[in-house]
Length: 200
Image 1 (tube, rainbow, N blue to C red):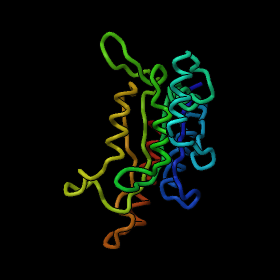
Image 2: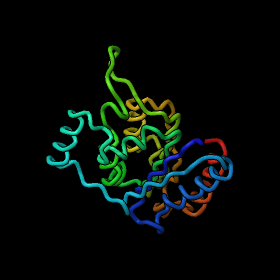
Image 3: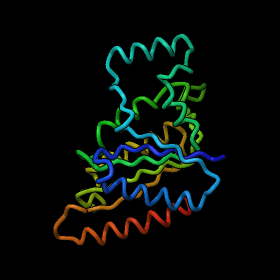
Image 4: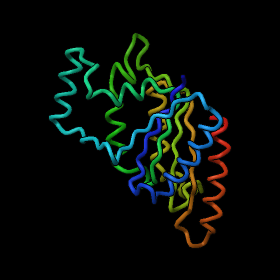
């Protein structure tokens, strides 16, 4: 049974526009893939401790002892074993909320999601695709602002590190710009979510 891992980093919960967009995608995906399992990882409910020195020391000691089956590595294994990955997070401070960064630090684990071989760095993740679902107050697809967007670019680079061949972005732009019809932009993004769910 194929597994899609949905990581929810929408800090406003049910009121989040990014969550709304992600839920539309997931509904379409589930209808098109009835045999797929959708695993939910809610980062607001199941909060991760940042990588403080004592957390890193424990992680390093467990890894050195070969104890990669410890619960500390559960997120990394779940991430590595997923067939598809969807991350939902709002656009904050030119990337995404810190809660998602903490999660990404946890899943970036040598000998689980990546490793080193004679040829150099190799990805160890099974996923064929990773999708970022996000909403942005401004429009960062424009030439004068696209250089400022860091979140999607970071995730695309992590996909390369983890061995995930395809990164995709589902985004509603300019939702806080009073000069545009924000509802029309959101409606267009929801329609794209429906279409993408059928092919992802």
